[in-house]
Length: 159
Image 1: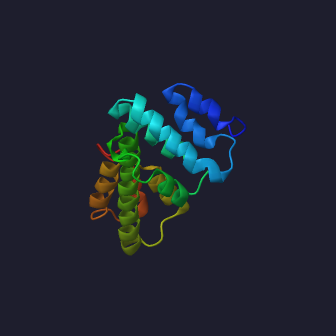
Image 2: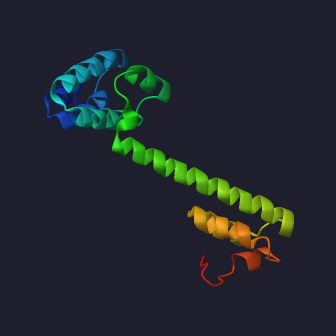
Image 3: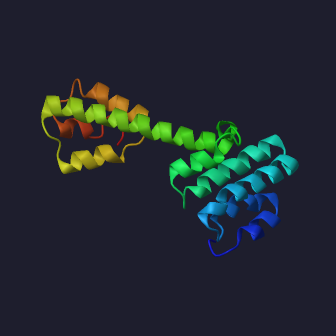
């Protein structure tokens, strides 16, 4: 992709525009490429599509450029927060963060109650990504006598 001149992406359909910054170009030409993209997107794309195109551009540029440079180049171009793609990425990140925090609390509380977990117990906890299941473990932790008892299959709670 980086061997293709950006002109080729800029001359294609609207869907090819997000690839233009990844084309074969010196970094000094990047602001001009973004400006040309903006002009074309503003002229040809409905608002919803424009948002998606800029979101795709942002994501693809992350493969090649540092975050600070991307933020500078795309600053004020469009509010990507409106993009369904961007929102999905945010939701996935938030869900992952919630699960990590819930898992961290189970491990911290479990250490205080049972001592250091075995590698198997840590692996079982790491495999859990559902916040509800991790919260259920936190509640069960109050009654369990060991890591093994906490993590064994019981009733409606299945690991």
